[in-house]
Structure formats: structure tokens, C-alpha cells
Image (spheres, rainbow, N blue to C red):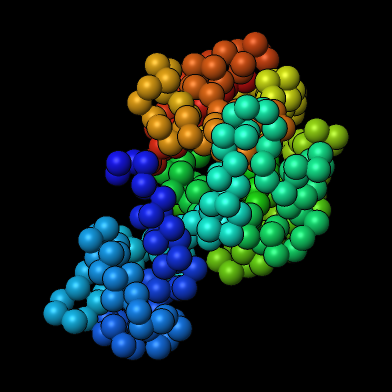
Length: 326
């Protein structure tokens, strides 16, 4: 019953993020009346709403005063660089409704998002500036913890340059640059993403070391750097396209160069990482042929492309990276 009615809790959290509740409480604890007034909540259910968030351990309550937990204050305050709520905002605006058509998708094998009319997913998203901004912020939300872990775990001291293929706002390049002053990086994405990337990079004062290279990774050459990163990219595409992108990465890298692929990798037994398996169902909702995969799958594709060695390392939460060495 808890799992079947889990959308109750999910939507309660998503609405709290939409209201900016955690950002408001990051300024300091507040009572019910002040929160209701600032957020425009109706008096009928405002107390139930806040107390439900207390019971879900998203808020704390001391007497009649509400405040963030340490976790919601860190991850869900829009004014902090640690904010991961962009993914939750996109889930609220787009995915929550689309997942209501999962049964249809499972029967038809067809996406159930804005692209039901047969257009490519990214054409649909990027033609609308608001949807594009929401999507790119969502990619920051889902990639930021993995990006921080990658900056710490990968041996960047051995390399001087990298490119993030499908960089979105640039969360991962920023984390790598913040941790490693000697490294220069490139954000590689469609031309329409450039101003969003440059704005995000400039907000971290890293525009002298991080640049943008516009391109379509199926039509254009990939940047020639020491390390190529592909995060939450391969799962958007069918198997032949996955192999094509890995082969292009191999061709672009120098001998000794590395390809890092990170996703919510499904465990090899396909039974212990529900997030990865549910993400694969999300690819059914969002794309014509995408699917998620195991670390063993990705390692095999890399070896087929010519990479001499591969390894899988956990990053953060459900995310892991597969590293291929040319």
C-alpha cells in the first residue's frame, strides 16, 4: 500500500519544491500563518501539508515553528550551489503527468511525453525556451552529486583537458574545474544550450577555464581532449546509437585517454538498483528507443570499440561510472 500510494508523498514533496518552501525556510524558521501567507496556501489544508512534510522527514517542527532538516536545507534551497531540486522541478512540471501513461507506454513501446507526434525528444524540448531551461536545470539536479564524486574519485592529476558531451548547464565541468585548478574543460552541446552553459559557468567564475563548443554529437566530430565524459547521455538512445557514440569517443581520444560514462547504472543482477531500472522505464516514457543498462553491458561495448581496459566505480546514490582507457 505504501508503494502503491507513494505518489501521495511524491507530489507533496514536489509541490513543496514548486512553492519554494525550503528556500523560504532556509532564511529561518517560521510559523504556520507566516508560511501560508508567504506561499499563498489556503487555510484548509496548510497545516496538513506542513505536518505531512514533518512526518516524511522533510521538515522539523518545534512547537508551532517549522524549519528545514539539515538535508532539505542543503539540497533544496534554490540559493545554494548544492541545490538538486532542478530535477524535482522538472519531474513536477513534466514527468509526473507523463508517468500516468506508463500502462499505455508498456503496451505500445512509444514515448508518452511532448513528442507523441513523432518529433525527436530534444527537438520538442529545445524549441520551447522554458521547457529547455527546466530540462537543463533538471540535468544539473540529477548530475551534481555524481559530478562532485567524479571530481574526487577520478585521477584528474594524470590529465590536462576534458570535454563533457551533452553538458547541459555545465554542472559536471564546474565541479571538475573547482576541484582541479590545472584542468581546462569544454562543454559540448547543441548551439541553443550555449548561453545557458556560459551563464552557469560565469556564476562560478570559471569562464577562463571552461569554454563551450557547439555541436551535434551524431553529426559533428567530438572535441579532441584527454578525457571525454558522457553522463545521462547513452541511455537516451537505442543500442546501435550507443555503440556509435562510444566508437566516436574512441576515435577522438589520444592513446591513454579516457572515456567516462556515468548513469544510474543497473546492477549486473538487475535486482538491486531500483532507481536504474525505473530510469530505464523513464526512457520508455521520454524517448523512442532509449534504455538504461548495466556496468557489464557498457564495459563490453567499450571493449568492442577498442578500449584496452575498463572498470566500474560507484559515484553517489544510484550513479556509477564506467571508465574506458584507450
